[in-house]
Image 1 (tube, rainbow, N blue to C red):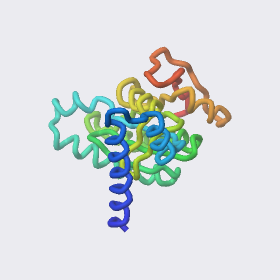
Image 2: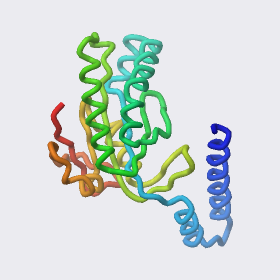
Image 3: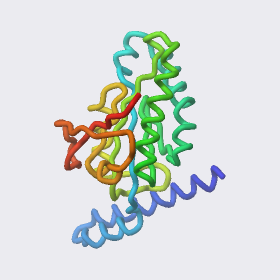
Length: 209
């Protein structure tokens, strides 16, 4: 199974690389090549970026091994929740997750479930062992390259919201996400002023923790 997956990812990356190389040639019809790239790889997804609050400061204070443990624990706790909500974990980079969802509502429900699970986990932990999660969500047309990566304006916006803007326990979303999920019960939305490039507006999800 893993061999088949590697072949699929490699084939996608190889095709994209060849098209980019064509695009770089003098006189290339970039518009036509771009259309081919979007035809091949363009898909609608909700993308989630997560980040652990205070990770960099904590590494300096407690050491990298302590926080490797924290990353391991976050994967152990959160991966089953991601799978339960039909998310696909594309990559883990440092203390950040990149996850995609077909269903926008499930992505928000997943984010809330993750935060609630961590609240329970943290109850018996010392401050340095607590896992404090920040979440950013975007939705729209993006380039999905196999099972390795996604690219697009909403991807960049979600990354900025989750990794740079959100504080611990916060779930921040773009307007595109809000437009798809405004009828979820028991939550509301609060507009924020820090709008990332690639998003029209941004919001904080208000939910019961």
